[in-house]
View 1 (tube, rainbow, N blue to C red):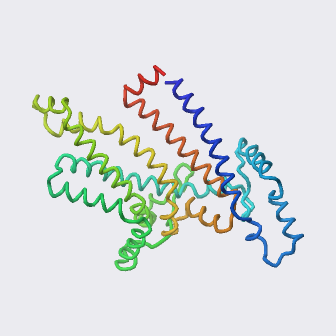
View 2: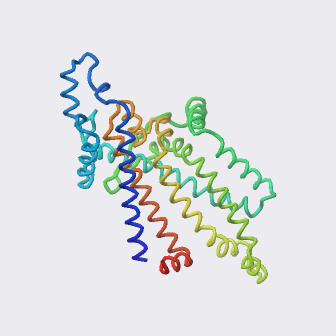
View 3: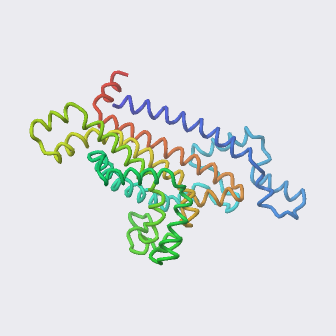
Length: 325
């Protein structure tokens, strides 16, 4: 297990290095921040001073080297617009995004696995058909449209939930959390539901497919032949086997929820990292954009690493393959 973990860490470090080069080249090739940050009435001397102050007068390879040198010490540059460390800006917004993503994944897992089990155990019933039809809608409907419809229905028409914002927060281990207050929970319901819809549909279909496959296995038939109740068969034999792919997919999808919460945060004015990214793109704040993308890549790599270890712990076949490698 230790050898496997070390090998995965080395692979993760290589992925981060390659992605840093790609992200840096892609972002730093787009536009000139000085054109946006400096007054259009500024003369060439003022623009030259601003360019030098931001380090944009250096050749690209030198800018990348300076970026790498700072990254090894945890410095991913200073925001052009705010003149504060980019990491500081992102870490300020990260609790809001993580809270929204965790709430969305809780909704998806708590509803998706039971609904998928029902659809898998009773595929021909009206409930099973309705669940699968609902999952198709969850895959098909655009996130931005669903968000606007939720606002129209529950905020504008019914007046039950607030339209935008995060609501009041309380400190939990030094981290501001809003879902622990009633008003904060009311603010989080619509954006979390909107963000969870696609993941909920995915988990429903994954659980249903795994259940149908497990029910056809010989060990399940043997358990039923021994006289075990269906509830025990599902709990002991079916769930145990279908949880391996579900854990893998849920872990990876949590990373995608963090990365792609941009649309939902923009619709609901949720003060998270995605909203910060959109604001930074509007002013070509390169250090913030690069820092955000690298942090997201690091989160993806970390989640992938943890999921691989969890997969290894859950499936003895993977443990044997890892030892053999």
